[in-house]
Image (cartoon, rainbow, N blue to C red):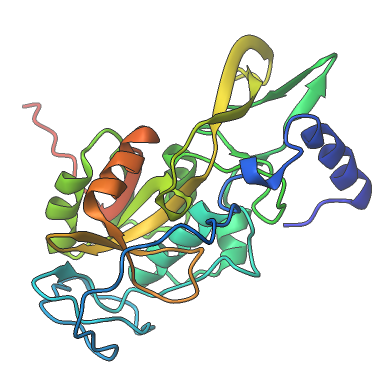
Length: 283
């Protein structure tokens, strides 16, 4: 995505008034060195997957994965890292992995082009922007930007999916139910949690624009460390993700910790599934 030099720096100046630190931006904060992530299960073989289910026809693109005993883990899920590509675009890169898994032949440029992105703007003395369910706040290639919530991503994917598939928001469903419902069907799940499963907090915010792009007096707080990942598996102790901030996959996170962070972001999630046919019941 490109914007003019003048427009870019004008908007950077606006954003800097309320986003002066990268620590508040989505998908960009790094974990402190003292934070320890859960180790991979022992006796790991980085060439195959054990006890996997993969009923959906998937892309031929593969990634290095690990044997995870007594697990439900999808294989042949393409891995993409946002590092060096989209500094705040975790939602888009995770969606790209999802689309490619379902054999949708797209690249990140198509994903960005089909995502509604809106920069905050200053009106008189206040800063205004849409709700993150309406647009990506900022631009995914701009490290001072924020991110978006599931409706923006499902709208984008709907523009790119064939008629045989549909993107569905599943927000409000517990993570355990998502994992046990969709992964056995061969369907990975987009999950909104936090960077490295760190604790979130209300960071910075703006006044909301309404559906007609008009200013309101409603205030919105952006939750720091927001992050989107692709859930590909689970076992008794861990959930396994394609984490776009990682350089390889899968990434294990403790189940209880993931469920806590997932809940703190509002249990936001989405899936791509076979399109549901609507039956006309009228006589």
